[in-house]
Amino acid sequence: MKAKIQFQDGMHFSGLTESGHDMHWDSGPRDSITSGPAPMEAVLQAVAACSAMDVISIIRKRRKQVDSFEIEVEAEKKTEHPKIFEYVTVTYRMSGDGITTQELEKAVKLSQERYCSVINMIKPNVNVSYRVEIVG
Image (cartoon, rainbow, N blue to C red; front, side):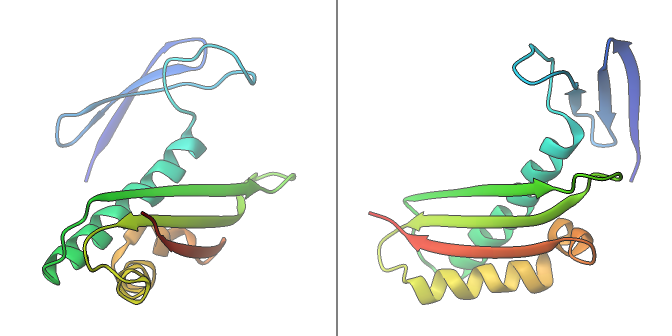
């Protein structure tokens, strides 16, 4: 894999992924207008997206119909440098005909422990936990 990033102005950088996708990164004081996520925000999005793709794939292989699915990720950063995440909590919310808490739990556990490379990459340094909720 390769990635490229180029300085724009202030703390704004534009990036290009190997697959040809443009990304914008930025950082500024709280409530300031920025041109993209800060890197640590993007890590949280990557945690959610990586695990979401696993869970949807696993549930679909079980021939279940997903009506709605969302993931919320919450994290707390350490106060000293490097200000890495101290903990990350991932909440999975799903609805669908016949999808049980046990089925969602099993899919999430597989994602968390085996398939999601982003979660497994941060786990050695971050306390990662999760919750599952069947909604609707």
